[in-house]
Length: 147
Image (tube, rainbow, N blue to C red):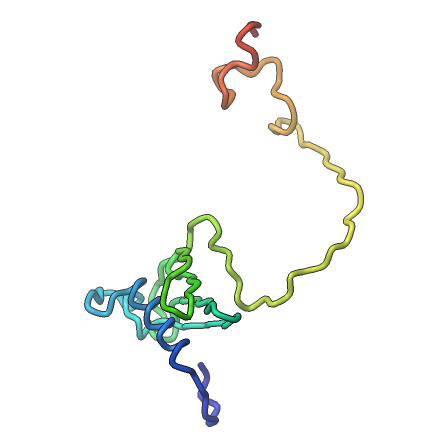
């Protein structure tokens, strides 16, 4: 949060959710030896939507003196106002592309007909007749026929 000289307000429910997520991701009693393993070296962003607080935690590069930082070092949480963690996704896991910056869901526009020109040697479409059956994911195409 930038210091703009104006007062900010954070209600207790949001504070509780932030503390819950921070302690789940980086327990305060288990601070590591690296800068990025500390809660105070994190940037916290949140959005409250009704009874759910969505939280995103990332390393604050300015807190680590420009040292090399790990790539998948953040997490996203959905916390209910009653204190239950509804979902946690760590960077690098499927579904970790939670973008709290983008509030726009996009538009529904027809992109036109799909045109794909598969490059020579690609694996697009049916396998080549010269591809050994054991290289295919499911093994042989049809157990009743041979290649």
